[in-house]
Length: 370
Length: 188
Image (cartoon, rainbow over all chains, first blue to last red):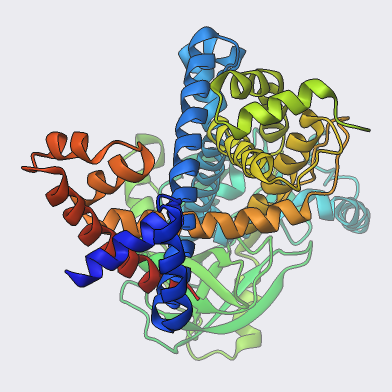
């Protein structure tokens, strides 16, 4: 209670509400009592603060009112002409930045997804596998020169070139499956060619495509030239059973205009992406080897060379020999080719490789598609 | 440039919290400030805020007897707004090339410093008032700000007589004082 009385006194003193005698008494008291003096100072400061607070609040209030009044009167404005624009444009102005960011994110996401898709999606074998048919353009010059040389060397009168006066589209290898001039090769070797010429020992023969299966990439050609003379029974057999891992194999083919021998081994029992109709070989093969025979050490056909892995060295894929047998069977259904016989004469067994090759050479033909 | 006599009248008006004087200053200068702030990365709300804060500075100054305006109110206000706004941009780490208009500027560093101190005092008292609670808050407001008579206050708040109301007022004031000084110490 005393405090309150004291406070009242101080307040009255500070407000100047005291009469002269009261004031004199109070000031005397103040000088004597330092606590009271302290209280007065403190109170003075506090009141100053409080008053100031009140005034400032009042001023803020006035400012707010003035602002609202002027806004209502239209003297000041907190909107720009933008407000009169259609909502879509307003939305755009308002969210420009967000939209830009969103668009960028969408773009980046789309790109990364595309990238990921490309990285993870199973690749078309085209990207990884290179078909070993010869890209003729790169060899064209050499080939022409060589053909001419060969033709000049061999019996120039009788054996004029059968090559039509057109640009060669493709090239590859083929081999006989019947002594009557049936040759097997890859479908992609003869793809798109209207004229086919097969070459053996420098002699050219015209051939026609009598069977084509793009799915297992096999084609059978028939030499249609009357010049062609049977060379007697084919010295090899088409092997029926499976080939064992690590088994030695060799091939003959025409990556150049000269027949080329290569040796390797079976490195896997299946082909690219676990294709069980193919086998994987470790052998060096080049464009032009496509369609070449893959032979085991006894000189029997175990497959037909078709593609290689672009991303690895010496990883070559060959179609299994069973596919050749199947193709022959299918072709035999055709009445024109009933006389076709699979070769079944394993006569190369036991011969050394040089002898084997000498005999095989006559049965392996270069294919040129025009 | 010397302040014009018209400006001095207005300044007096502002000191008295005369809404006509305030309105006049508001009308003549708000657009300029708003434009400046909008051009410098600010919003309409920022413009209102900054302008009213500088009006408060002008108000505080106008109450000081020793203050004499050495330039036009327009220049003075604009300079304060500009300073306040750049400071705020800096605090928010929003930089940008300042876009200036062709207005004159006067140095206002002292004003800004003083303003910050006053802002702090205001915040402290505001905090104390807010944590005081009712009816103390209204009672004190009625007596000290609205300058009502104790008799009227007693009637308004339902006290039986003015003396009771007065007692209550003193109790409230003591509480407020305690709260204020407690906060004051904390702030120091």
